[in-house]
Length: 298
Image 1 (tube, one colour):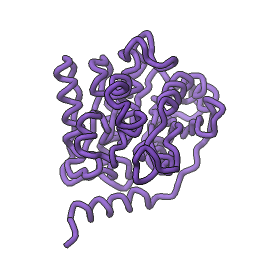
Image 2 (cartoon, rainbow, N blue to C red):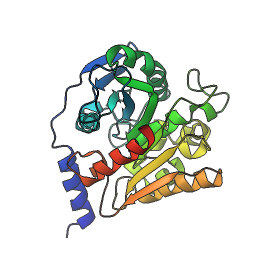
Image 3 (tube, rainbow, N blue to C red):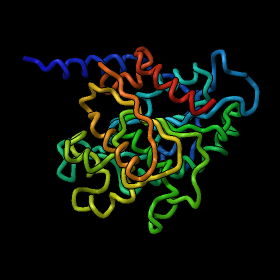
Image 4 (cartoon, rainbow, N blue to C red):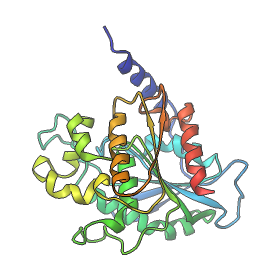
């Protein structure tokens, strides 16, 4: 017999990936590597004010895909376009992901690169205000919200916590003060590495991201959002109760860690929703995400 949860997940994934890629309005590089680029989508819809400088909040999208090379930003371009149609200026960030060759005892492509994945997210966020000013003048970096799905949700939480990284963090990662953000909306994020590893989320991807199990304990304090609290940044997590890719318990562990650190993190749990409707413009879950972003941005 087939598992109904697996069948639902497959159907939700098929729907999310059925939308054709949406070309950006502009693209800019934040480094020399081919993956060090940002796509910009101009705001549209009732809220948009074409030609008006800094008229729209800037939503930064960090895509998921378990930090693995086969999954790039193209699969979230319909989601980026959906947000642009809500009147947001959108920056869809690419970053270096894992090698396409299996290693580190992985059965498939390895997840992430240490330290390059984090190098890129830090560099992209630092460069965004200047890049947006040139590529998309409507974008207002003073009203910036980070969002990300799955592994991208992890990166969004990490980017918002750079000011609380250990003092000996790799060069370019740590900020001397909190980033200028309206907040973070993390979508089914891999937000607690210990719980994620215990559950085998994405085939042990979080340990692979850190360079393998041998490095997990030493590098986790520099990479795990659950270890980088409190941030002082307004944070919301949106999670499907039916998610079998990144289970609800991962988000709940992060929210509990935040509470222990004296910080309140909003948690919106959606009944009957799995992993992929959160980035599917055809799904009700995507509208919930847009509303969460709106509450922070406008």
